[in-house]
Image (tube, one colour):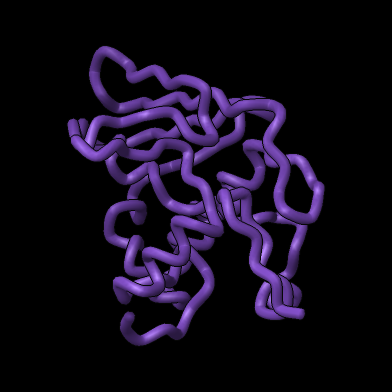
Length: 152
């Protein structure tokens, strides 16, 4: 199937890692077989007329595999991890200049430095739980995807 090094969706780079990541972690959007954008963790989203602001409204009933609720803070946490140059995330270049904020528990806002029509296609990254430390995550992979990691 290929080399496998990372369980984290923000570090996945091989085909095997990306495929597994999609099973363990959900993104704000997903794509159907025809590459149409569909809701996943977000119920809906809005794009400003100038294309510089994307606002995502998260579903308020999503839980991580450990039972904790997913909130906008988890999305902000994940994007800030992606933007950390020391992690060398393969997603870094798409997110380096994007500002992210939580408007409330279930609304995430992305401010882009310039309009970029295909930006929505970058919003399928797997969301990490902000309540789990890096050390804990390496021992207990917790996502919101359709499959749960069992390391027993």
